[in-house]
Length: 551
Image (cartoon, rainbow, N blue to C red; front, top):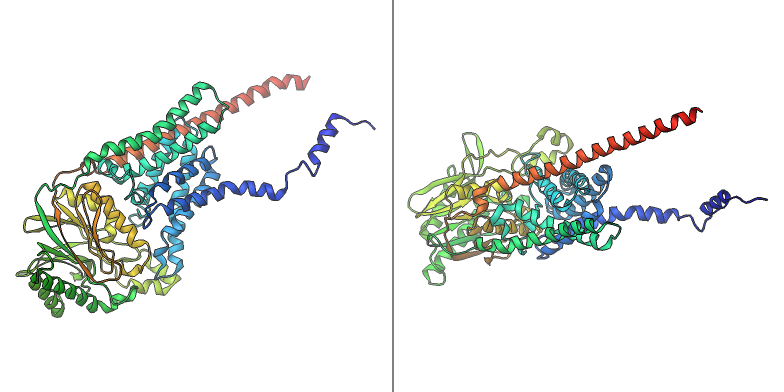
């Protein structure tokens, strides 16, 4: 018997000892998917209430390693898994009272945006200085997610996880897009640094170029953050005011608390009367004005005399204006309204919430949702209408900007209070629906970012907690517990100067979106040219072999 080299090779390939076990091969294929999910979970852990902001960097480093060099189909899937790992735990609070259906539906939709970003990151990952293009693609994805569908859902912006981080001053330079870009760029830069260190099959020039890109991707965000610290100040530019924040608490958590709206109003009146008594006794400083939270009076004081009477009683007792969060109906329109209530004149100014919450304050696709589950439509029986004007109350010369609850997540809704003259900002909120979930702490972190972004004191009066006073440098100087009646009184600075972020507005975000578009265009163009070149080479090879074949 003659044994040829071919038969020997075939016997080696067919040998059970040399062939990889099928289960092992399947496990190897699952490694990128598992890494994508785990990196998403790592990003979630970096968000409040935890102060592990730095975990965002290894999260993006792992994501970059998973996506680099992938085809678009694989990148879509891996990006979607990353989105699920991040958003499923981050947004679990959305199902506290309505069950898992809406929570899972929201996450499933939002993760699609992350999947598309994953495909974009994979496309630009083959280009020189890829961390820059990839970070810009991520911010472009955030920009889209903040606008569609249903006017957007910016929750989970990378910037909102950085209230305790070293990159925070960058919020004053270019707002949440620049802050988020710096964090993501640094994470991808770490990925590239590891790759440069591990891979050795490249020319010296290529290694130097890649090492320089990795170093700059990490160093520039850090140096920029250090340089931007000069933009952060809590110095009073227009004097100070003493502000009181009232947290009256609610009878119980959950959606049903609105059925007890008179009790909620009475709780806030009671806490204000307690403050008035303490001021009279010298136990508390006399405030210049008092801030109540959103939904502190869901009884319309313009319609119901009993509500008007008790609010008036509280204002007269404390002797200064109160900003009251109410629900009013005017000209057939339901409005989430802040009312400035003067102790002598009654209601003198109003602000109607402009960015209202889909599925909470109005119901998109009402007929479709009603066909699926009638309980969902019963939770929002009548849609709220949107306000049209920025909210800035003038109180004894001080200008207080208003961004009601959900509006704090939207760059424009906070910025235009400052461009309309606000010297401090208040974010009246109602988180009672979400019980003791992380939602309260995630939203509080947003207000800290806004304080630095616009260099303004931010107060956060909340029905059930956590209420807080935040300095223009992002520090929380006072806060309440959750589901605890309390008041906070503090002298705070008024400021009128504008940060670069305030002045530039949407410009940094547009620049980063254009940068992302340029990187994607470059990557797509290079891919098309590469395929054409490859097709041309194959065609020439075919032509060269045809005569020999014919002969």
